[in-house]
Image (cartoon, rainbow, N blue to C red; front, side, top):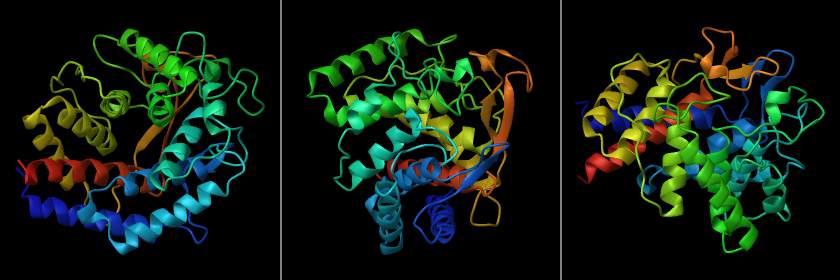
Length: 313
């Protein structure tokens, strides 16, 4: 097992790298999708949320300032989307709401706007039908990997009857979305993203987590997938899997502050609603987080939860 002091050292280097990569306006940019460009608001909200959720021992003054600047950047955005070329989407909106909530802020109308992305089957779509700039029909159906993030963003507001009803419908959808016991992902060429998102949402709902089947030794697609599996392992009580993933992540980090970028984000081919069923790149093209910021934020967050769990075991 990797010594915990080695894990903490690697976490600290990763955090320093993330903070150093923050733009002057308080945001982070990463990925580079053909015809669409890099992401600003979505990456900023997701990375800022990961930093804000670090254990107190790792939230240095530098981290606190980075989060404050990210919150200000997100709060100043008129709408929340992948970038300014794309329409508002549910995933960015949910991440933005979650980040603002860490600072005790709620944007007027955000809850109602997010509820508008729920589809008739109980899941949440990334884009509404016929959204300009998001023309593929498969981009406006419910998405397995977007729904749990939306649920998390709605949990603080579930005293409202319409929010409670929306969450209940999404949970029913969750239980029917498993494929051979696991959850695939629409936007990610990864095996464990959706399970990790549902593990977090289930905990915040105060419900009992029902784990997917344990991994059976299949190769992981990227260190980012190992981080999501680490989160699932911690939630599921799979100690051996957690230790193995922590070891893998520390080794994969290399000497630099940020983890190497690999193609992980999938842009589904037009009208392909189940891209995970297709081999190779037939389901859609995969893009790397070119700067490694997104992956590093998830990895240090997962390793921090691991270190906190085993330091107090």
